[in-house]
Length: 318
Ligand SMILES: Cc1cc2nc3c(=O)[nH]c(=O)nc-3n(C[C@H](O)[C@H](O)[C@H](O)COP(=O)(O)O)c2cc1C
Image (cartoon, rainbow, N blue to C red; front, side, top):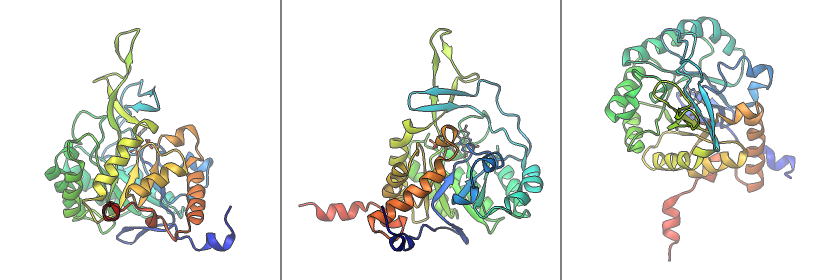
């Protein structure tokens, strides 16, 4: 237990850049909380630091044909295919409602070309209630486009183009389905990203043994999320942390406050909770409370102090 005076000294706030300050480091990951409205019926959204919306594209998308999700050991595969109502609807119908929440709302933006990202951000930039953008350059579930995240130069190109049209915070969401995630992180930082989030889902497959074919339709693959990916996501965050100076948002398999702590130690400045929200809609709020208590018990003044510094370990070697 912590006494109230200790708790008072913990500052949970996190700056992501361009004036975007989160009241606490815990956010709801894109695609696992929609645009917040259903979840707002179940939890007090203002208890979380940020809502990262479902991926938003220039035009409405119906998404892929079902089945679109499959359970796997320690995780789930999804192949939603960016179902969303299109950016005009988000800007005109949803954004004014976002403005009523005190939690930050970051719109996750996706596109099949650089021009599509720029169009989306321009349209959203005229809307109230939007605190920043998370560029999804890494969705594994649509056939065309979004390969921008695999090539550092392409990733830099889309980042720079969006940077040029907005003064709001630009976060680039990195794909783990690359050979060198650190190289992409460096490229987007140089191109003007305010922060990066790591990681999106890993390409995976589940086989229907009786039917002897993949469970998911089309290519048979989907994006793997949940506890199964946590060690992989931690390694990605640590690799990215070593090469960039901008904030890193850790995401992948976070189910409780202990998992969030692990990401902060690995180098994250903030975290996102995704698949865990499907099992328990209150998971992210519990993580906020658990993290605050952990920091108070650890006697540190803020999340940043938990960070592992490899160079300090090296100095301690005999
Ligand atoms: C059903 C589902 C839909 C998702 N949709 C998006 C999306 O639209 N844009 C995006 O950047 N990430 C999307 N993601 C990825 C998550 O935001 C997150 O990066 C990933 O699930 C890993 O976190 P987790 O293990 O906590 O779920 C989606 C994930 C799931 C499970």
